[in-house]
Image (tube, rainbow, N blue to C red; front, side, top):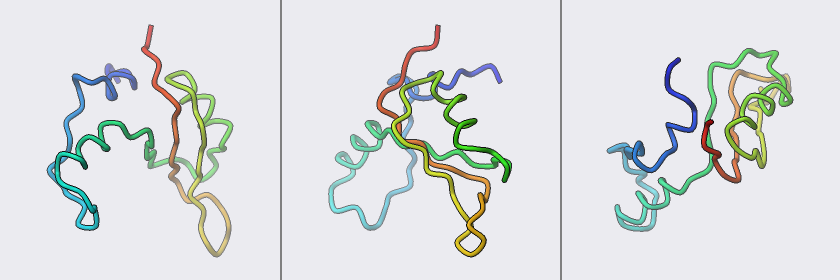
Amino acid sequence: MSIKLNALFSDSYVDVSQYRDQHFKGNRYEQEKLLKQANTLYVGNLSFYTTEEQVYELFSKSGDVKRIIIGLDKVKKTACGFCFLNLCSWKRAP
């Protein structure tokens, strides 16, 4: 993959989707501003055996990872292939 992770979050690349959350209590411009400032990243298509440590090791190269939330099956309490990352900030790739 030729695009670096940080390139996805640079100001010049941010292109906000046309989708609008029906439950948002503000106007369109407020919602776009908040989306551009968001620091939560959804990561899907993970192996069910991917650990929190592996996710941290990979994404800490692009910024300070504040929290990782691994999606769990509510019955089996096992990983189900996705996670959310909360990031403090994004570093520029060298």
